[in-house]
Image 1: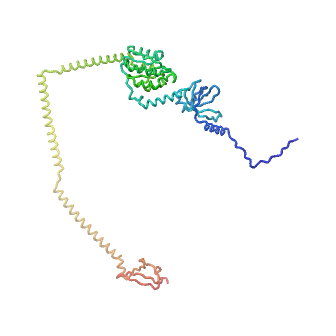
Image 2: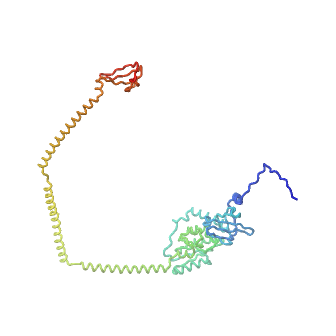
Image 3: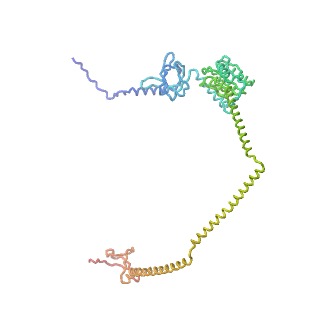
Length: 456
């Protein structure tokens, strides 16, 4: 037995809802998320960090209860200042969005920083801008380091590893230089005040030729004592040059900007403070060797010069003979110099006279030729003028034959209408019109009563 269903007629006013593609759906959701969540700061722990060959960073940001995927494109990652590692606590400034290809909710990171350093870094920038505006970092205020320091002062903690590194470098390079330690804590509460006090003590005593302010590496919180304003102003007011060697090469503090010279590490600060004794000894040995060579060369040159002078030294009688011979030679040269131009000019004058005789013109022959040419020219002109006069008479006779006046004298007339046009055909003449006749003796006006063609 077959089931039968009655067809339900469709409602003509009904419109089916639009069907979205998955791509369109994900695009709309992404736009909704980006409008609803502007750039926000998010804190969490790095997990599953990957750096693609394109330079983009992909990682998961998580806390104890949740996680979210994150991407930081190469154009932003290259300015991060550090590369995150697994488990790092960070804070990111990101835009909430959706990766449409997979439909995954994620965040696009624009800025990343270590967790907890945001406020410290902002305080660092504010103080740096303030002191820079007051001129504490002006390169013109920087003092040169002494070339031969006899005493080096160090401001650091007696327990710091940086002190051992500095002392080791100084003993290796300049064991003869005296070292004075101005102890101060390099981290913790009131450490900045103690550091500034130690710097001012060194400045007041002026026992050292150069002062090292140093500390080993650490986090920004560990190095914060060297970012305090009191330390920067103490360095600026110090009466002796200051080298700042705080942290590692990538660490930068306010003390670095205020110091006369910034070193990448405490050991580098010790190396900048004094040139190694071995280098100075080697330089002195080289200078001594150069001086000995220069002295030997000077003595050799003087000895050779003395020998030359001795060979050139002659007795007065020999000098007089030498000068007499030289004078005779000069007199002969002068006589030759005077006679030679005169002889040469005499020869040139004789040659010119011969050329003038050969090229002198025969005036009587030329005058006879000129008279003959004149008679020939006069005859030619007379003959030409007569021929042109005869041709002119012939042309005048022809012109006289073609003169219209002579035709009129034979009884002909020139007929013109009122517009001055010459009439040649009877059809051009209209009845009861005036015409003008040009006769040999003058002009007359006539009226036309009728016209008749020759064919009639």
